[in-house]
Length: 205
Image 1: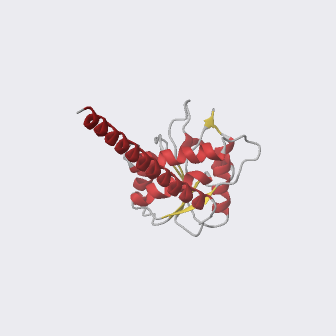
Image 2: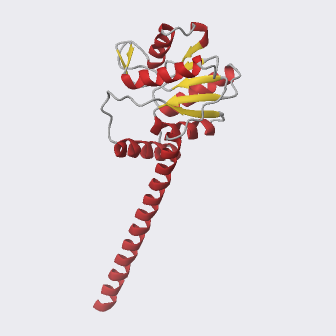
Image 3: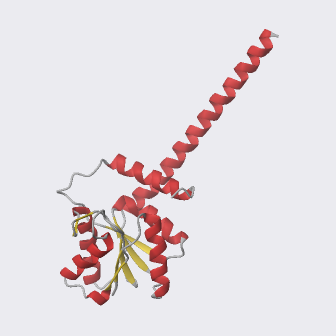
């Protein structure tokens, strides 16, 4: 009887180990695939003529865009001046003070000579998924069929996936690097995006 119970325990332990290994391999394979997509979108610029250029928000400081946000806005400005689209949409809600990221983006672009009528500022979203939801509503209201989305390189895979799931036709265009900024390591940034994409796929975001 003792030997039988011992054998059952060993069999159960082996099954637990095997299942754990399978789960770890599956998780590792998933992370590797997502990271491959993240790097692929980060390394290519799909910009082409479209109906609008969309700038995803980033931090602002008392009404001024942070270096990262300014780099996104400057890239969108270059696309606008290059004739890629006649309209720029800035996204992002409360920045933690009296300003919104979308509103700060609009003011910055107007200060660079973009007419107020060529800018739509969305000023309420608090996450990437919510920004896309509000962007989809703007696109429907203004009959926008194609969009160039601008953000950080590693952010673009998640953005395009959420946009396409919302029925938006998008092209991705990464902002330039900010050499004076000390960013998190590429590994940390990639891990953040892997978690963000996975959370969205699991409907946790």
